[in-house]
Image (spheres, helix red, strand yellow):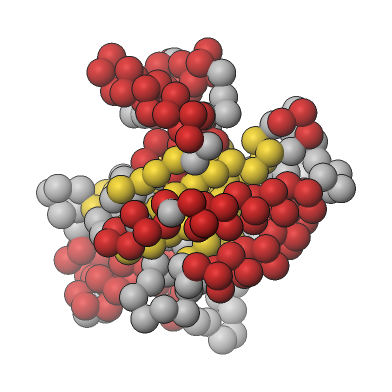
Length: 265
């Protein structure tokens, strides 16, 4: 058997990238870390360690507990989606998303659901001074996001029960108790009735969103589309004319995706 060679340090290392990757290793191997310990391990100032950790939190690779320690975030253990057609979906969705963002002057996101989480595939960021930033690559629980709830509303109840009441949900810490389960089913019924889902600071403070599901062959949910806005502007996104623009963008993307070689089985 051929021995695996040890990787050599590159001749021109990028120190900030290396430090971020080392932080990921600390979280993966140690389970949690304090900011002061991270700074000591990296031999950097605490302010530098804080900025690096803040980016990992922003992208879903780390989370901060109430104890102020940092632990691995959902993106660190996220499995690969394994769907090559998603690259084509993102490509064909960009123009309709850019048009919608320009029409509403708000940030527009494309997401895909993987289990109980969503992953942001693409973002078209608004040019407004007060806006929601780029979330591309971020992973967060589907249950709190508008696009996540729109996708969950497409699933039958037995599938939802497997996701949130099954053995794997318990092991992953995503299981819902009886009250939470009842509330989820009630909310998803409302989503199906309205045709869209809302998030009022369900993912982060000060952020609101309205989301819909993009359907593919046999009405299978392919992805979620959302308008993200500062919470004070969310109600304005619910005007019939603005919702119509969101629905039109969704339908445009669905039509473009119809010609893609998509396998949803």
